[in-house]
Amino acid sequence: MVETLDPKSLTVLVTGATSGFGAAIARRFAGAGAKVVITGRRADRLKAMKDELGVRCHAVVCDARDRDASDAMLAGLPTEFAAPDVAVANAGLALGLEPAHRADMKDWEDMVATNINGMLYTVRAILPSMVERDRGHVVLMGSIAADFPYPGGNVYGATKAFVEQFALNLRADLLGSNVRVTDIEPGLAQTEFSLVRFHGDAERARRTYEGIRPLSGEDVAETVFWATTLPRHVNVNRLQVMPVMQSFGPFVYKRDLA
Image 1 (cartoon, rainbow, N blue to C red):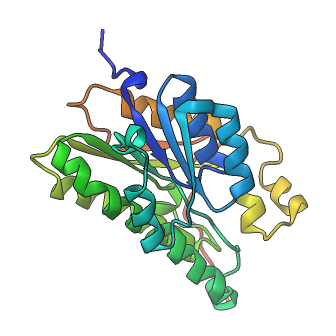
Image 2 (cartoon, rainbow, N blue to C red; image 1 turned 180 degrees about the vertical axis):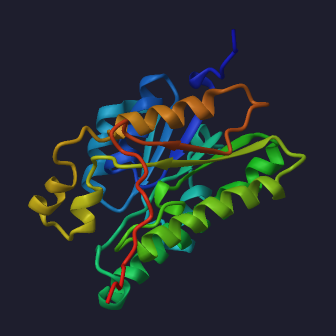
């Protein structure tokens, strides 16, 4: 029988914890007895979650895209939350589904700022203390879009390819330490993701999941929980997870038969 880590011994930091995967991950760990630090931009949602999770939860309003704010957030944690064992860099988003030549440049910039820069700021702020303690686990939230391109996925997929490669490069840098790194790569999942992608168009977001049972936030939270509570000598490098009814298609062709 594998002896997993006791979640009651863990302090878990989750960015982007006000909805979707982040909220589900925070609830999963808190429900198992871990202490959780939750961050996000929406103060009202953070307060509601703090009230829900109780004294083992510490909430901080923080925009992951702001490097100084990320540094200050970690430096200002109360003593009982000050040394996270697990850091889940979850803050991220997709915006738009237009082809590259029609895409909104602001959408591209926002995806890069959040999915790449925000993730980097979180990792760089937490990593030195983990290395010094020779203990910790960095979890990055990737996507199957890193490996499988699709029309309109242009910059979103590219940011997740960055996450994937950065996770592997972190593993190379950290060889010799007991700090673990995992890239979680979900497929189709029903959260606020599509509502954000389509700028609040609820009907278009709904159609994304029509006729299929997608992953839930809780499904993805369970993969994070499993990977981070394995024995400390075990590292899950990448974990791809999809709904059963999502798979791979053939190559497509535009034929000119004239």
